[in-house]
Length: 558
Image (cartoon, rainbow, N blue to C red):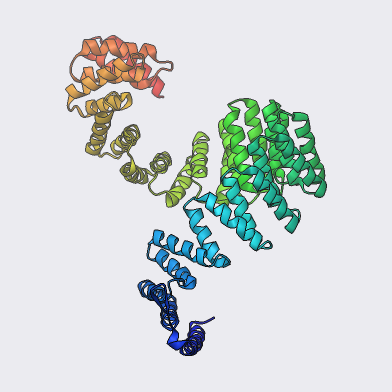
């Protein structure tokens, strides 16, 4: 009914009540010292309703309170006033008002329902139950009231009474799964397994094609340790509905608990291939299985089979190709891994793991052009990931794009928070800047590395060697080269650098000693080592030996 219609209705009501009041000596009556004025009561009640519809809470409260001044036993005004007190946050006043309304008019359904809301919110369940017992007698066909009463009885653990009410409700509405579930919960709380089993068997008899009750009974048998009975129920489910969405999951758990991992895994594969089971559940049980499986060739093979099953069932989803890609990566089957991740990226070009592992696989295949191409593509989606800048930089250097390599590495280092990764970037940048002839930037990069990692043996060696070639800061070069040899005393390259720095400083005797060590440690003779040794021998005046080593160096060079 619209507000305008309500106003017209209440207008007629006021006219009608006014005529009655005139007939009763202007509506005035004295009752226990209180002047009863029905006309004024009706006027304020009407004004209160209008305020209520305008959502004027305070106005409504004032008018309903005035209505009660002229008729203190007006239950209708109390009912309305209770609602407005709630809107004003005066909960206790609201409760007292509706309770009084029910006392005055105990037959009014709506008054009782509102009082029931208060009892429930205040957790006064005894009062709530007493009230709803009356209501269900008064309104035996109102199933909502009966349901509310059952809930309250369950909350207060009055299980026997709750079961009686459930029986009553079932008689009225017939067999109902919700009632069955509630009844089963009660039996479970009471620890009455026999009743649970009896109830489920009753439901199976009434609904022989409903696999849900077979599954529930199987779980009860499992909890009781009756594995044969449980398995019989599970098999019955498969017989009735082979595509039941959760039967494979249930059997997986069953066989897994028994330690029969082969049968359990077979159910896992069936679950993945079950068209009725949703993909999220399949992924969850896949993750569950492999989290507990540990590492072994058998587990790896199982992962591959799962990946193939996912790809077969969901060719337009990346999950199967990610699983197979991970398997191939673990087996260092780089070509197959590359194929799997390319396929995954064709489905989801934003997948981080696919980009990363694709590039790792191609790096192991030494396919620098592919690494460069894919690292640059990955940066379009992940412009703040240092790993992609690293591979873009290194692969650019390996494909003779040195300027690009420097640009990628310089940009990538801005997103690094890990010191060891920063050292790797700066170490490579130092080498690239030196190759480009920008020695100051190269040396700055090396200094940054040594500031983070003073024992970075590769940088210690290269930095020392490049300083010796320039014949600059030889004391620093000697310290760095000596430290590199100390860290790796059997490294021929580091010994060669050390000898050459000693040579540049004029310490020819020690230089000859270190160079001789380097040559002995070489697995394959190197012309540069022989050239260095020849020059050292010349400084020592051992010209004949020097000529011999010059000849060896020339022969190796040719």
